[in-house]
Image 1: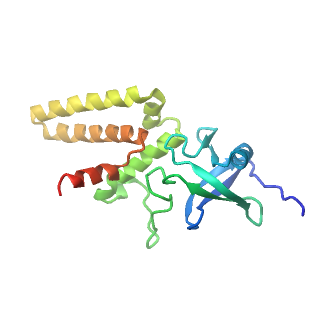
Image 2: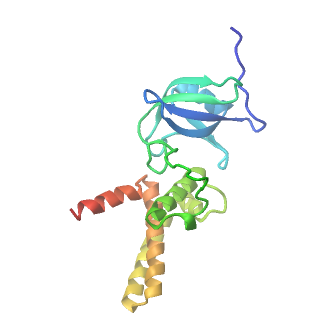
Image 3: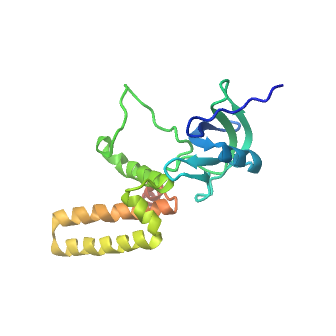
Length: 210
């Protein structure tokens, strides 16, 4: 049988769809270049290519949610690969089992944070922070915090906590709200660094009010 040549696009990339072994559930989609595909094939774990960071990354290298490869297939045009895996944890950076956990209804899509229901704001912000952590886009404030390391965002948490206390002491309602938002935001950056989602914190709060 003639060996089929995998077709990469003009940038040397091709989409890789990751599927859970057994259940058949689609976990995620990411990009691979020739090197990351070869690493995936040889090492038995998924490796992808980050277009924004211009580097290869191993799935789970930070979170521990690695994906052990059981099979790699390509489509009829040989320009998409399907990677079947056994996952050690959630595939999505939000903590969800799969990246495809939201439904589009009536043609509506969430385009920005102002369109998100109040109860989902923290979850949406966390998704954005995790995306910045993974892709590290240039010019992003969150990217700059992760580049500087934990000392940067931990210092900000301390500063915002002090400013929040001062606002409360002064009885300045507007300042209290503003500083509380800053404190929450930077706390979520620290949580994202440790892959702790807002849902986990909510679960802990619920325990305290049983």
